[in-house]
Image 1 (cartoon, one colour):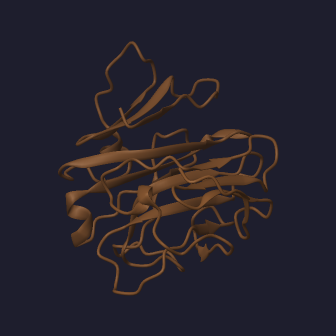
Image 2: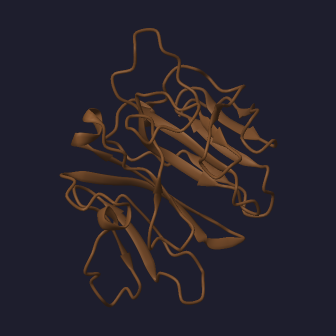
Amino acid sequence: CNACAAPPQAGGADLILLGMDGMGLRHQSRDEVPQKGLREAIGLPDLGLTSGQDIAYCASDPSVVAVTAYSEEGISGQCTNGISTDNGRSFSRFCGNSTLDRPGVPAYATSGAVALGGNNCEVLLWAPAHVSPPKGTEWCLLVSHTRGESFSCASGLPTDVPFQQAGPWSPARNLAASSVDPNTFFFVHNWKGVFRSNTGGLNWTQVSKKNW
């Protein structure tokens, strides 16, 4: 298991689990094995080895769920990140390496860490992993205030690639949202410390210089 969540919604999933190779499962009841996996829910039932990496849900509306994943086929154009508005039953995909490109997303961005605003489900933050970016490319955390319809780069964070985002295979859980303040988020950079945003992820300030 790479990541799991139990969005507290009446009648919702008992458990949503992400794992290696098969992406993940949505358990309506954790005592029953689902007949279909998250690859079907995201619209890629025939996708090969796919590893689910991170999951987040909106505290004020647990029907809104976001997941990130990486596939060996992702390099050639598959999109395996998704956002759901029905508690993980179905997803709209977002990524940079497919025909489903969203404005502001670089082509080499994939998988990585994800967070949703605690009381504002329109705010989606994505710390993507990099797959063969062009030489000299700077890393950036991607911010959407339109629930993934478009993204922009955050300011105030280091532009060198954090360890968790240096490749697509290591699950990255270095991004978190406040459950009470929709504008507050936290990000951990391995060798640059802890950063906080009070602007819905758009601007960041370093709050700890501890080398992790």
